[in-house]
Image 1 (cartoon, rainbow, N blue to C red):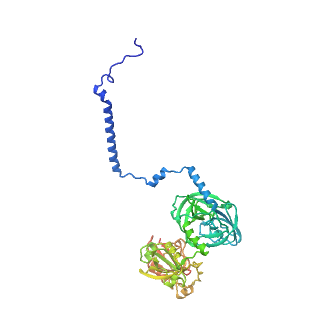
Image 2 (image 1 turned 90 degrees about the horizontal axis):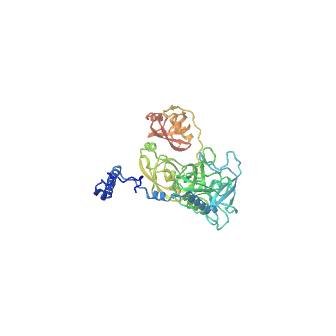
Image 3 (image 1 turned 135 degrees about the horizontal axis):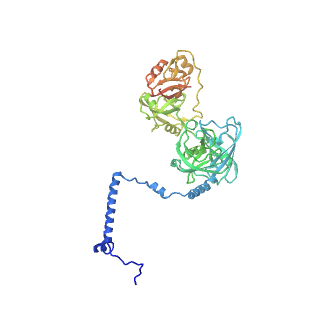
Length: 509
């Protein structure tokens, strides 16, 4: 019996009326259509990519980095392992000093310096690390350099009186020693291999809190500063460095010391703001050798102050920028440079066979030259190449001492120039009284506020000898030369100040 709820099958186009060949070959047809569609899509995509140009290839190193992303727990474990390996070599240093620390670069704060008006005798503290198993310890010169007594506390709590082996103020490195053997020590790494973005750890005793560890990255490498730190080479880091960290190690992720923590940039004179500086380990290694063997660092000395040969300075001498370095001043008559006949305005192009294109290149080359060695110096004077031989001597303790400013003669005619100065012709009597190196020029009597002269740094008492390519022997020469320039011109001015020849750059308004 037929169920009344089940209708009988009905013939129609979706069943019995389709051709027999379709019912047999339907899947073959569908497969062929899909295949043809995919082939067409591939051809279109290839043509489109060709019009777009080549597809960039991810560098292998980045592929590897993407494939080996470090999980937070793995990074944490790495920090733990490094801390365990390096902390036993990190020491706490306490000192008693008679005098305050030397003045530092403007805007830069020695984390351990006393405040203004502090006591002449004070207790101080800092950090360091054991460099050899027999008790040599590296730290900062400003931590122990003027100390009456030095005490070292090891990571295991033992305390020792330390002997000061030697210091080098120009790199802020000091070497001390305790009477102990078999000590755990830190290994100096290769600071030249350090790159911005590398993870680093800073260790020390900030605010007396011993065995403190902070982490950060390398912010920059190859930082250089002038003044007393002209030989320093610094790694910049945002790893927290605070009072008491000075002298402690900056460590890479292999547990190697790549720097000695030394400075922080603190415009308001407060604590860490994320900009700290560590002395590069490759420089530390060189200084260690000198301090350990001789108790001091011996550097060669030429007796010149040089500046870059920029566009304005180069035009003054008819040269191309960057062909050498401009001699701004020459030290006293007994300096090697003065005895060899070098003078202000010469452009040194090579030293001992090595090309010189930047001041730091000459500074480092001279410093590394053995005392007593005779070397060839190539230079350009009046657009003509020349050479001299110079016997390098030992760098004196205070080579940058300057004579006091001489009394100025207020008599004589005065003239006003476009630069914004009131100038007076230098007489022979004035030149003798002022002990000028160049016996003529235009004496600056007044600098007008808000003028190019003030912005360039010209001062009352400066003697102008040259402006751009024009020699200045009188105030009238200065006025005439200044009147030839148009607004926006950048020019170089050669002046004599307190017995030193220097160059200033002025932009004409």
